[in-house]
Image (cartoon, rainbow, N blue to C red):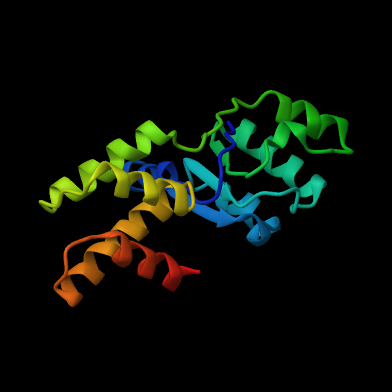
Length: 175
């Protein structure tokens, strides 16, 4: 009844659409009322967890979810099994979680993503430009998608093809 990942994930968004009675809470929004709300939910997603929920409260929330046969998914940049929990019962609950790590994309995967996104807009760029983007944009799907959207918008507004100068301009504007 728990999973770790990083940040607000694409998975969270997909689950939100597919599962009825789902609620996403930022970890700092979790309180005693959350335990009561759990009864009406099928899945509670705790986002941005970094050991920032009082341990007794988290333990109570996990116990309630177990009793109600509800699910809790916890997104965390650092694996929660590596965090220091003082409550032995909470540590035991955490150790029973299924852990899923979401790794950063490889260069090859990013090349495919960039090519696919640009080809959908009928844009082709030289492999050297793709390599330059990979080496200069933050290595996350969200950042790459955002960057490619900005490149496309800038190219259209300037009525220029995508070249190294345009890419550098967009990179500099994002910094």
